[in-house]
Length: 139
Image 1 (cartoon, rainbow, N blue to C red):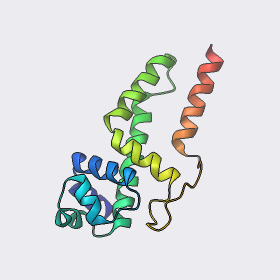
Image 2: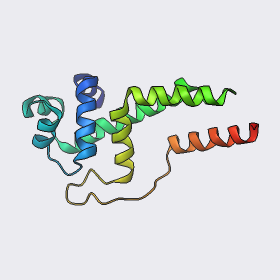
Image 3: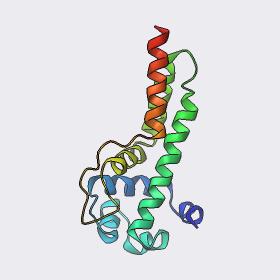
Image 4: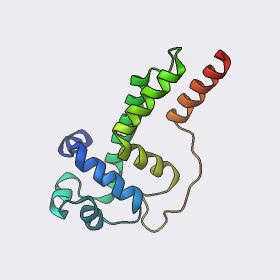
């Protein structure tokens, strides 16, 4: 079902919704639609609940982050070039990166309580830590 919903959400709208949720973590679907520049009806056809939309964007953001790591190939020795590849790919989906990062720090799933949750380790943090440690050891 999530894959079917994801197919209905094009990159431009996904980015706009990701930015809207990053900026307004307490917004409801109607407010998010307005901020993202789409109609409530269009948004409801993609995802009828705020929670479903968040799940959809978290999954898309995670795919973007994993693809960024994969395309950067951080295991290759030219560390400056690997970092540049990672940065370029992350920036290509900057809205998804911002949303994914926000979702890791703030409980955007709960309208009433979007207080900071604090740092939570992730596959992305672990990959970066390993990359920088390899780079330091190589110097």
